[in-house]
Image 1 (spheres, helix red, strand yellow):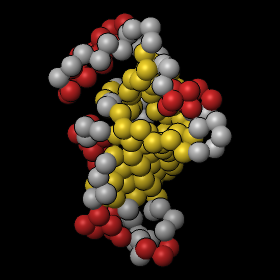
Image 2 (cartoon, one colour; image 1 turned 60 degrees about the vertical axis):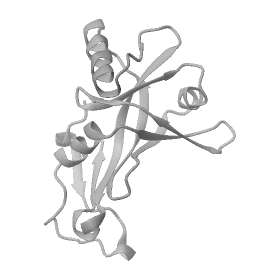
Image 3 (cartoon, rainbow, N blue to C red; image 1 turned 180 degrees about the vertical axis):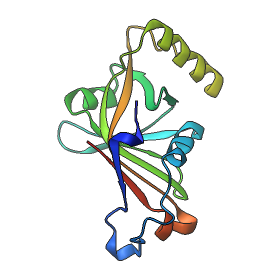
Image 4 (cartoon, rainbow, N blue to C red; image 1 turned 90 degrees about the horizontal axis):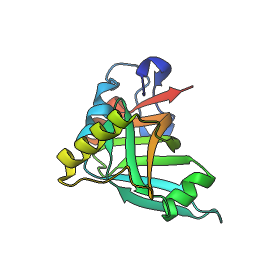
Length: 164
């Protein structure tokens, strides 16, 4: 579970973009979590074995305080993540921005939590993702850095959380 209690909230290091230095106007942790809950599509950016970037859209759920999604265990992104779990995940919007840098790990979910996750997927996307099948890989994001801002007031709202 991602907790803001385990993070330092500060301004992102963007000196040439006019980002405010005072804490006034920085976003509270509930803002990026609301954006993550509400989003339909998420972009997962991983790295191929030869160093080339790989970006892929996924469906996912903000579940039990973390971003969780499923993918085919034989997909390119799954191979990339098994080799190097460091990723960047972001929303589609350039106006309401959330970018999370961290590591993806296989989700450790009880049968009850897996059933609840599938129910949330079905509610959100209108289909059962069948995440419990053998060729599915269910991943949970452990963030290291979260960047968020509202484009309409970027210099004031630009906020960064660093997780230990």
